[in-house]
Image (cartoon, rainbow, N blue to C red; front, side, top):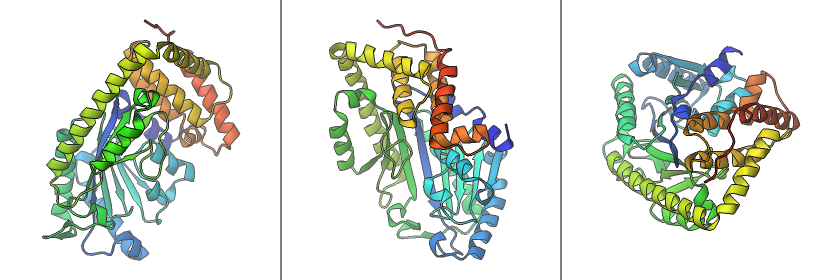
Length: 354
């Protein structure tokens, strides 16, 4: 396994400590340097200077003592996409200029994109709803950046960003949720509409521009101007707690009214994962989603929770190519994914239905 693969596949606290319904939470801050044009309008020389300044400052931040720094221009396409699959950077980031750098800590709970849409996109993650801990951490990084760099700020509008929707706090908070019961009971559509009316955005597994797969949905704030950070986080927390309650209630409904359907679909999913020889990404995610539900309902041991999340990452298209250290075509990926699935799920105990 090469150095990049070791960094990508090292134990991630985010994967190991997942919880029911809430898969992960994130706070992201957008910041720009006042001395340079926004990324879209900056010349290559300016972007290089931004990258050098930001790298120097971030390298001196205590939070990044044990971290990795990647020059995106040095990576293969599938290596870049694997970082997107791991949620360490965005799809837009890997399509940007050759002066982009990525910082991430060894536990994969903090990452910073240099020269994405903004000069700095700082992210912290957790496997729960503890926004206070996340905010304290990202605030410490932001303070370090502001003390050492001339950050673009306006006394009236707040932090200045490339996209007007981020002006103000420059903060986006989001939560990845696993909502299979709301999908099964066909309540998810109404829930999405209600969340959107409250000023929040619902996206898929890989954020902006992605569709919902495997019953995973990402909820994030849409407004940043005119709201304090604590108010945004408080409102999001209240909404997420309500969604969690709806999902848990829906699971009880499924257990009472669709129990045979539940047993049948969970059993079929485990059979596919154990016996397949060709497995698409969508089928794999949908089946693993049902395995996660089986853990939540007590049909499989709770100790499997983190391993299932790690497995879901491992069988993503680019993760498999990193493992093989070569480009795989679509058919090869489906065969490799099935091989990894058979190997892992052979060790999973039999289902114990009520």
